[in-house]
Length: 167
Picture (cartoon, rainbow, N blue to C red):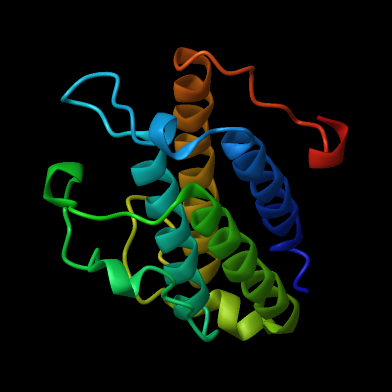
């Protein structure tokens, strides 16, 4: 792996564990509870995060999973347009599969691929593929904070940094 991408890959590994820890013990009803009509619920945020990782996988030249195609979420721009969502366990399983493929792809990328212009421009100064990876790694962290907050708000224990078997 290119040494420039290594710290971001480690952050993706950590974010993978934190995502699963945020969903740990959350039932589907709680996962679709909204704090207000102006906020997203945990399931919607989690689906969005999986979709973003799947996008990254494809943008890096990997084979996308598109785990939620059957739910017709591709054209959805907000939670109020959603009529059907997967169960949280399906979301967690999709996260694991997309991440497995993503981490494998990161291992095979060459320096020139990282330096190439990203297929999508993100709101950062670096237009490279490495810059895209940095932005989408930060994107994970942003939404993990939302999941952790919602978890506590709904009365569940704080998100843990521990390995799942330690919970």
